[in-house]
Length: 632
Image (cartoon, rainbow, N blue to C red; front, side, top):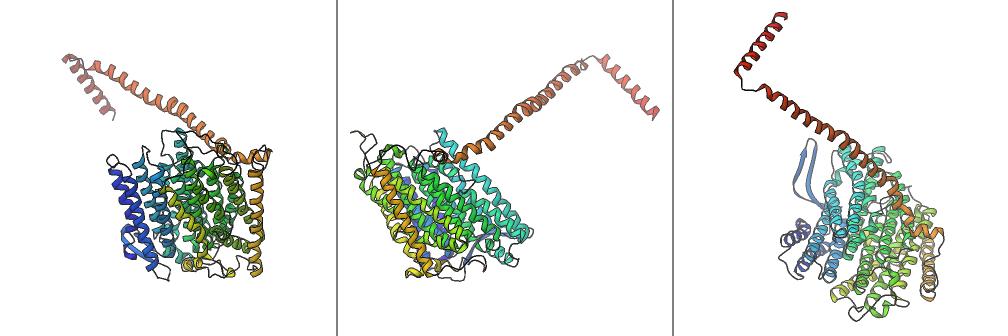
């Protein structure tokens, strides 16, 4: 089966090409059906590969053709099939299929229906290239491809200027991170003469841990991950990406683009373990991002913005797991997060669909009665992401907390605080949307209604995965065998001895489960009291002081970036345009043209057509030549 792995990315590509060439010809929902079938076919092939692939040696490279031969650099266009790539195939194609089917109902009637599904297929294609590439150069192709598709999908409703600005913001901020990735590629070629994973890891393992060149390369790779996976300071593009249709938000946040940075570091785990400085930096950045984004999410009023900052915070927790060396825990949370975050975004889309485009949670309330099925599914997603057993998020977050406490008590406490924030902002969202008195406008022509079956049943499948998904990684102290970590063990290394504490015993593991769970239950009870029992009291969230205003305005980071970067760049651009380009360069070019015209007008009088003048010029010329020859 592995020999035919190229079929997996080929199927969505065929869908993109076919729909793209027939944008005007395809009628009804045909484009959505074609796009969904191609991605579903890729999922079925991935599923078949999962059950038949039994190579425990670390992976198999499938070479398609020779690509680049330059001096000592040889790059094959090849795919890597191993347990990590198969896992990502299942996530991308499985969640992608669900979102495609959901989109048929959500986007029905939209003027860009066919164009939307062509972009979605292209997005999935590039993400599959990213996770299947056997070297960093192919990964970079997929990396740039998903960046392009995110630009197209975020700005899908391009007639809205604000949406175009959001698309450009995402594109530009990703280019900043991508520059770091590109520089890392140059250093890989210079130091190791290759971009192949196996060759780079083999040669890097011969270097001492903490070597400067390894630190430089891993820090540059991490810079790329910061941009793509929306970490501080390059995370502000992700909340603005909510400008795109809700299925796009689900695809970007759950299964594709933002997970690319997590996957890249997990794929390069052998390289990163050789740089303790980079690993510590990853922990610091991940923790800061999780805390900052989690606190911002508590005060957002847009249903999609709450989920967007939630994604940033959850990605921060995954980076903490990566930095502490618990790569399996990071991938486990990436997997469970794909389930419940896709469910939550699609649930938000169902709410928006029911309210005919309304996204402000202050204009919702009481929807539990109007759309009970959506409420039930959204509740499951909320319980899962909040880490309440036996839902999926409980097990994956516990694995991250265990690794954080093994790394150090301060890291463990801060990580726990970031994880607890999830319960506050998610139950605040749940209670304000579905409980209390209705605050939305409803009339006979636009009644609030449940979403169509193509949307609700797709969400039901994700809800089931959000319930049972955690049991795939049931830890040993809870009576399981942690099959998830065992499955990835041939690919993911363990931390180098001495980089983390092993002081966590069985009692401590149980305490790490019980104490956060008690705190989560307490926060849920507080949220119920604050947003249901006392919902009509003045104020929102936790107060109205200066701190609340500061956090509500996202720590004024966008304003800070505008003042420090955007305005100076615009001033410099205006100065160069008006003073240099128009004032000097344009005048120089225009004066040059004027001079040529003046010379032409005056020289033309020499050509008067009078033979006498020509004889006179000839004699004068002969005298001048003789004069110079005489002196020579």
